[in-house]
Every structure is written in C-alpha cells, then in structure tokens.
Image 1 (tube, one colour):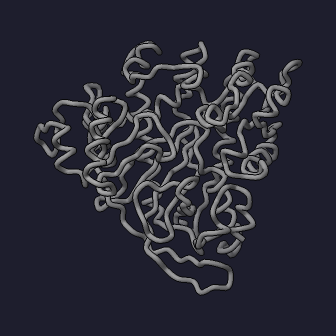
Image 2 (cartoon, rainbow, N blue to C red; image 1 turned 120 degrees about the horizontal axis):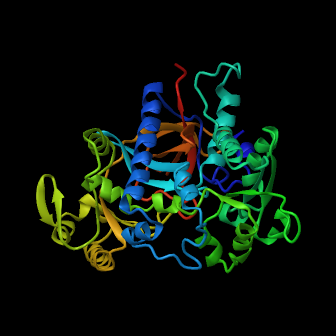
Image 3 (cartoon, rainbow, N blue to C red; image 1 turned 120 degrees about the vertical axis):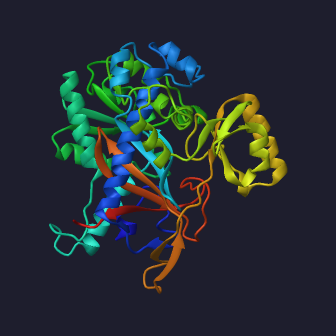
Length: 425
C-alpha cells in the first residue's frame, strides 16, 4: 500500500525498510506542536517587520543582497509581500530531553512534505482506519489546508479560482510529475482549474504570449535549484510582469532566514514576557556566528573561545540555506575541521550557531520487504508541522531506519519518511 501510494514521489519506500505504522502521539501533544509552531512563526514575522520600516532596511538588517539569482522575485507591493510572507511554513522539530525544540523554520511554497504527508495519511487511514469515517486517529490533510488558503488568496485578490503549480520533477527525484499531480487533482476537486507547469512548459502553459490562463502560481520550486541546473528564471520574471501572482511572495524567504531565530533567542526589546517564555521553552540557544561576547548559561562568554572549547555542544548553520546543506554538527566532526568551520563562519558572518539537541528515540515498527518479519527499532525523527494560513496540515516526519541522528536529509541522505498522527480524542 505504501509503495503504491508514494510511487514516483521521490521517497525511498522501494529501497529502505518501510514503517508499518505512523508515529502516534496524544492529541494534547499534537496540538501543542501546532500551537507552538503558530506562535513562533508569528514572532519570526514580527521580528522581520520590527527590523526596519522599509524593505531595503530589512534586507540590510538581515545582510541579504538580492541578485538576479538570489531573492529575485520581489514585487513592488510591499504590503502584499508582508501580509502573506508567513502563510506557508514547515518548522523542523526534535523531541529533546526537555520536550519539543524547534531547530528552524522553512517558510516558502517549495518545502517538501505536503505530498508525502498526504500519501502516508491516505495509506494509514486505509490500512488501519477500520471504518474510514471513524479511524482511531485524526488525519489533517495538507492538500485540504493549502486549498483553503488558496481560496482565501483568490478571494482577497479578486482572482479566478485557477492555480498553476510551478515545479520540476527533477527537484523531487521523479520520472513523472506525479509528485505534483495529486495536489493538482485535489484542487480541481475543490473547484479550481489547476495544472502542473514545469520549466520547459513556460511561458506557454500560463498563456503567454496571449491571454493569461493562470493569474496565480504556486511556487513549488527554489530558484537556486533551477539556477544550479542552468535553467533560466527569465520565464518566471515574464509571468510576474504579465500580472501572474507568484505565491507565496519573495518575502517568505526572509522569514526563513535563521538570523531571526538568533534574534528571538537573544531577545528583542519589543518582546513581552510571554514571548520570552515561549522562546525559552521551544527554541534551543541560538546566536549569530560572529566575534564578540554571547550570554551562555547566564554568563558572558567570548563566542569563538566558547565554540572551540565546547565543540560537542554546538551546531553551525548557514543563515540562508535549505535541505541541511552546509550544516556542521560539532560532535560529528574532527576538532581540526570544527576549528576551521568556526573560523570561516565567524569571519564570514553568514551563519548562526545553535545548541545541539540530543533527540529522543521512538520505537517504530518496520519491515525490509513485504512478507519479511516485522521488527521494532529506535529511531530519531525530525517532526515538521505543516502550516497553511494558520491551519494544521499534518505533521511530516523524517528519520534514518538504522537509528542515526544528525542532519536528516531525504534527497542526499536517503532518510525514510512518515507522518505523526494524533489519537482521536
């Protein structure tokens, strides 16, 4: 069932041991993850807005320099950019010794998880639901949550219910567009006109030259991926110039900038006591990677000396990055490499340093192949609540079947996937 439901969607269900059950949590724990996700995302958005009253000021505060290939799609309507900059988000969370810890927020339309979470949710409901109307767990469908958001966007902007899903099968390691097709089909069931549009289809599939067929495009791609393959972004610029709304807007990538996490962890003057308690509860200690003093366990410390003296306590991350690229975990690398990475990060001022969180293991039932003996093994999952316009779209999860922790990557690392489902009631 899993291999059928997730075929050609870039997962490893055909080559890795597959889960025989979802990760199960209480309803209270599930709701806590979404409440914390929603509130922290709101703080990240406010941190961006409080940084400066103008777009250029915000870019300067984040030390971002837009180019033709980096942050290329800002539009003139800054109010629209800011109003919709945090509508789609996927935080990455580990359950540490003291509970959930939010390591970062992916804020865009391109993050992975919705299709995978939908597929696993469908499979678990069919396999373990008994009566489909009353399964023992609740499934929040990311496709439904995003469709609700897109309905609101079309109504707000006065656009027809027509959406182009702009993505590339190569980004999802697929031979077909099946990764995107399921969501397009769901949108059509909801009354949208919806089509999958790949780079080679542009601009014709949108209606250029000629009449614009889609006035709203879900940006299911990262510009850096297209540029790395030599694909031009000119067609996307042409769509925007023709009046097509690329959604979510470019400012969503500013909310994803990890410098904002460091600002919140350090504290900002506008933060209330409730804000500070929320951050203290759910964010691991995070600071900008730069020379100078940093408060560590209540004492000011020289950051460079602290990082070198306590290598196993810290992780370095690029402030702008995705898919675990460039992340360096102190305890997983040799001292000489760590020293070099610390020197590079502090000199470049383009990274954050974060306290390492040891993940709690979960005993998950899995099997290598159909018909083989099931077994339970402890795994260290990264949990990712999916948020669309404040709505819960399920919790996507990744883990290594052999129990490894660290940087958990699907595309490069071969991590297996699953979902977290709450017990009904």
